[in-house]
Image (cartoon, rainbow, N blue to C red):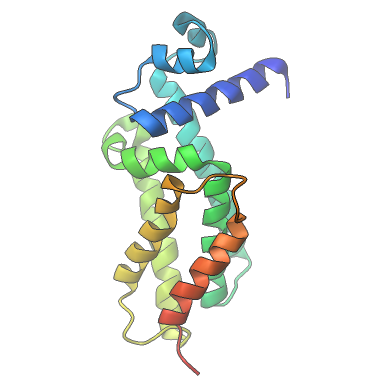
Length: 195
């Protein structure tokens, strides 16, 4: 990575932390610059706007998340194994992009109304299709209970996984994989067919 690319990545990380803490609308370019230890005008050397920084943060996070999800889906695993792998990948993304996840959780509904961020609504539809399809396939092959409300389960799993961005800190006591394992043992034993 070139020095300018490294600096740009550092600035995006700082901006993501400030956006996650204060909210996108409440954050000023000056606050991001202050957190980065530079003058506000100097940020414009790297980015043309605050909106551009947010766009790069969110699109980068979603691109990486979907690369991981697509690898899981391409593995053509059984429904339970697919859910396990998707949850684990989600916790890994929280570990890598905690601030971006928090921003996405807080801001995506409002931002998706703007043309520049229309991809956020498309991402939400793709999430829902992926998770619902896996849950419905699990019910169909008797891996999950027949009385499972797939849509309600999807919402529960989605919200309980992604809210971890509010409390998880990289480098903490548990790895993302350990958190996923604990989470999955609590959730899946409640929806799996008991044999």
